[in-house]
Image (cartoon, helix red, strand yellow):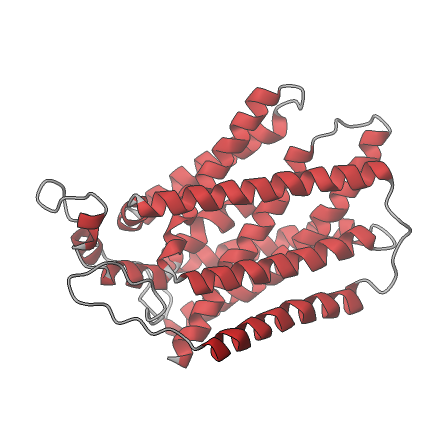
Length: 339
C-alpha cells in the first residue's frame, strides 16, 4: 500500500518544478481551455497567493510553453542533434540492460513452463493496458484544466483523497474474485483513473522529458523483469522484508519536507534519498514482483491459489510509475543545469 502513496500522490505534489511551471502560465491560457476569468475565479492567482511548502529549487526552463498573447519563440534542435540524442538514449537503455544482466543474472534457469509463460504474459498485458489507460486519461485531464486545480488545491487534501481512492480501488481489485469479471474490471479502471488524476500535473514538463523518461523506464523494467524471470532460483523472493523497510524510508523522506521545518541542506538530502533511493527500491520491487508472479503461477497450476493476473499487474504498474516519476524529475534537473 505504501507504493500507492509514493507513486501517485507524493511525487507529483511535492515536485517544486511543477509549481514553478504552473505559476509561469499566463491567465490567457485558460481562454483557450474554455475557462473565463470573469465568471470563474482565477486559478493561477490562487496558486500565487497560496504558500508552497517547498521553495522552488529547480529552474522551469524545461516547462511547457502554452498559448500567450506574445509571439512564442520556438527553438528546434537540428537533425544531427536529434539523431545524437536518440543514439545516446538507445545506448543508455542497451547499456542498462547489459550491465544489469551481467551483474544480477550470471546463472539462468531452464526454460519457463507453459503455465508460467502464460501467467507472466497475461500479467504484463494488464500492466501495459493499465499504463496506457493512465497515460491517456492523465493527458485528457491536463488538457481539461484539472491539473491546474490539483496544483492549486490543498496538498494534504489532495494527498488524502488520492490515497483513499487508490488504496480502496487497489484493494477492490485484489480481493474481488477472478470469476466476478465485471466488478474486478470496474475496480481496475477506477484504480487507473486515480493514478491518472494525480499524475496529470506531470504534463507540465516538456514532451521530450516525458518521452525519454518513459523509454528509460521501459528499458530498466524490461531488463530487471527478464532477470527475475530467468534467474536460476527464487532468491529475489526473499527481498520482501528489506524492500518494505526501504520503501518506508523513501516514504518518510518524501513526507519530511511537508511535515518538518528542514533547512536547505536537509531538503537536499531528503530529495536525493527519495529520488535515487526510490529508484533502487522500486527496481528491487520489479525483481521481487516478477518472481512472485512465477511463484503464483506454479501454485495456480497445482490448484493452491486462483489464477489472477490482474492482481499481479497492480504491483508491476506501481513499480513502473514510481520509476517513471523519479526519472522525470532527474532528467528535468539535468536539463535545468545545462541551461
